Length: 268
Ligand SMILES: [Zn+2]
Image (cartoon, rainbow, N blue to C red; front, top):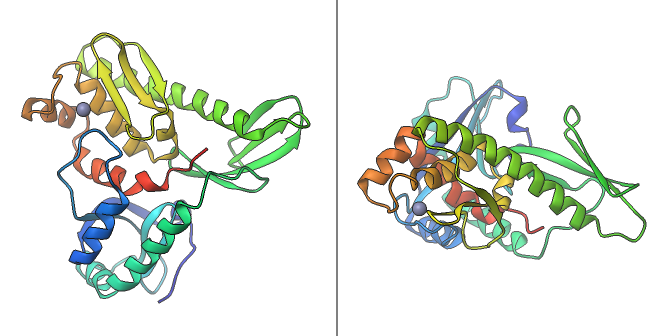
């Protein structure tokens, strides 16, 4: 099978969050892969998220890496044809997902010059330099410069900078959802739990896992909208989900993709 390394952002237009059902074995593997990362589980089980990019290419290509399952297809290929192609290659996809999962569990993220890092749906390059313990986000080049004092641990600097970026992004998003709900923005704090993306309580406000910063905007929005909707409905009943839907009409596919991507979040 032809594998493509074409960057998703650099070509054509992108279909986000199309979902496809694969074989039973696949379903078992994917369920295993995306186990209990968020406190609500259930719907969407057995569905595999993929990101479809159409471009001028002539064949369909499948890529599996830390960004998940991605399909590249010629501009005019129908979805049915694309999905049957994927089903034909179920075994290969399973094997690749296995390999990817094995490599993803090797250990913590290694900070080195040139390492790549997903941030709000974009791939950044980490650059290391000697300096005064400060961070520069070079937007145009998508480079995150860590200027580290001799002997200091760049990981701490990286984590702090990601947390700052996370808090700012989450506050912006929460502010816009709070406005739409007609509620004041509750206190917002970061958490770093490994088992939860977010929580909401009337007493302490909203906590959002800073590691969400590694995921695409739609998945961050889903968690933020979910927790904000709890301001109105402190449960997971039908009225709660209709609040979530009001804020984010496509929340179901955003949630499914979140489950699929959970295992790809770097351990920094
Ligand atoms: Zn909830």
